[in-house]
Image (cartoon, rainbow, N blue to C red; front, side, top):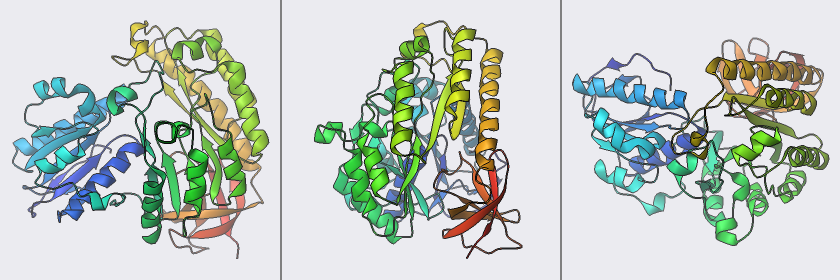
Amino acid sequence: MKTKNIKSVESQPRINVVTLGCSKNIYDSEVLMGQLKGNAFDVVHEAEKVGKNDIVVINTCGFIDNAKQESIDTILQYSELKEQGKIGKVIVTGCLSERYKPELEAEITNVDSWFGTNDLQNLLRSVGANYKHELIGERMLTTPSHFAYFKIAEGCNRPCSFCAIPLMRGKHVSKPIDELVAEAKSLAKNGTKELILIAQDLTYYGLDLYSKRNLDELLRRLSDVNGIEWIRLQYAYPSGFPMEILDAMNERENICKYLDMPLQHISDDMLKSMRRGITKQKTIDLVNQIRDKVPNIALRTTLITGYPGETEQDFEEMQQWVEETRFDRLGCFTYSHEEKTHAHSLVDDVPDEVKQERSDAIMEIQQGISMEKNQQKVGKVFKVLIDKKEQGHFVGRTEFDSPEVDNEVLIDANRDYATPGTFVQVKIESAEDFDLYGQIVK
């Protein structure tokens, strides 16, 4: 959530949920709101206007410095409104609260309650609501109803040196397949057509419940749900990658040829220090195997620049690999030195400006790759899911694009008409770095 001017209005008591951070937090907020709604509360998400009796629940992010600062700023913003008598209560939950509760309680004294990532039942009790088991799978979507983030597991067992997620989310816990299928059916009944599968690590799914990696079976079961037209995979882990999920992808038309697999780096020294459990050559081999098995797959990855000890040679190795590998989608983060992680014992020795320069250089390479790949789509026809109408265009995505982070297809609303939440066939007429422009074909 971007900081915005909040207007004060008289209103009946209600609960306003404010969400910061990643798609996992969005999912958690939706579950919370579903429970509150089931308890007959008036619930809103990120309302611009607040009432003096409102209870504001802030679902925070504690992942990296920028996200932590945004969460703190948001808590302070609503705390000030409480001091002024413009809202009733402030409740804080989520990753930041899980990780820094004692410090936050000492510093920000007018927050009414602090809860962690697994405190849903306690949070509900604090506002006079009961956790309703019959509502498992029910959510109040904050996304457009035609797509939904779909969390299949919580926590993470990976030992990555730079990551504080296990500190905030705990060990990996898979949700049972039958429970997930029931949730998918409920979503489909309410108009959801695309499931975006999320977890800290999708590919670990099932090991704790079924003593084997079981993502392929889950995919097939979800694929059978009537009304689900796209299933998208985000946050796969490269080490121990279950190749059988690619068989499911090839077998089922409604499993998108799309894979988000954060690889973080390619230098062997960096991968070893990051405790990624994989080498440069094994990473290269894995990418090649995935592309061989699913030739038209869109591969998305995320990289980190400026990790402790990253030399110019390490960075140049990563640059060259990005140029050679030609990922379809790529994001880049600068390293954030996080307390209580393994990497925090290392010296954060790459200056911030160098971290940023390296990140910018990677994204410049990717911009050129994206432009070339988009130009190759001109003249071709793609199935597009329309997300919204905005500034004279209908805006949609192909199966190779996830919301918020990937390319969009723009259709001139003066020439064509489409209904958000529907699929249309679009012929691509022109392309830019990260956008495609097209016309609907009948």
